[in-house]
Length: 349
Ligand SMILES: Cc1cc2nc3c(=O)[nH]c(=O)nc-3n(C[C@H](O)[C@H](O)[C@H](O)COP(=O)(O)O)c2cc1C
Image (cartoon, rainbow, N blue to C red; front, side, top):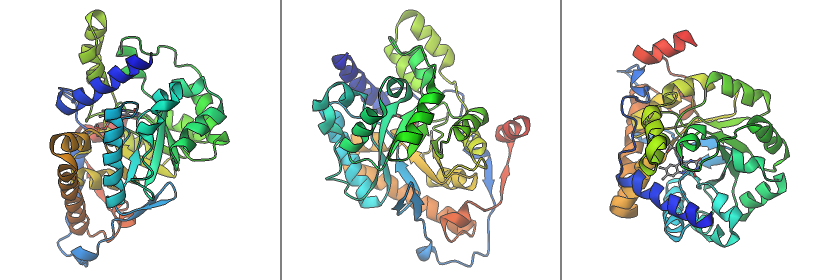
């Protein structure tokens, strides 16, 4: 089992960096969010304030490097690099699923990044199906062992149903989330992995006491696609059929916003600063990026990852200036026009 997880992690990194794992015919629909140009901004571009407080920690920009990896020496190397980047830039950082270290404590070193990121917002990670089978104290110990400020519990039924040998029994997820959020000593972030959270799911989460979500919607990395590459025969055909499954990120942010949550993170296909600005104008508190950061890092090292993220931030600042938003709170209140398919979703749900 452990060896299997190690191989799967290696496959995931390789496929995410070089594979054909994007959605084919579906986008985030963030392009359907039109921001309104302000020709007379009463602002100095150099004093625009992009800082936010997320899950109790101050970030220099409303950005999170979303959960990716852990459990192998290569993954540990990646996590340490991502941690240095997050610390230097004042971002949040999500660790990959800690299932591997639950099964073998020796793997914990690949998740221990506090030395590289002493002050960054650090989020642990575990699947709801694994968490269901664990006592709350065991889950708390996983988070404590890496010095996490919050714990993401991920939901990934679409990926599991395609993955050879993946989980098939998803019962009692909500009850597990309710237990963890009421008993754990740190905030729980309920996170999808690329298929998005619907209005109905968010309502059930809120009723169960959940205050924080990462919608991780469709339009960026397709985890069904990743598992389809690894599958054979009938599982591969199933994966092909569901390659583009999921709720576009813009729709999911729109669904989660306005339901009184303390934190809505918009992950899934965020690739530019304009995407970040649009997601925040729709109601997200921060945006998350996974694969684009990994690709830049693996292709050109930390320097390339910083260059990519410099571009994202420059675009976010430009967008804030051009809509007349002096800070993130103002950006979240700017008027926006929803067009095309996004508008169709908002009118029919
Ligand atoms: C290589 C890789 C590994 C991932 N592993 C995890 C994981 O262990 N736990 C999790 O919650 N999400 C995981 N994700 C999902 C991302 O956090 C994110 O939700 C998804 O990739 C969509 O974002 P993107 O379009 O920016 O890649 C992983 C993503 C990548 C690219």
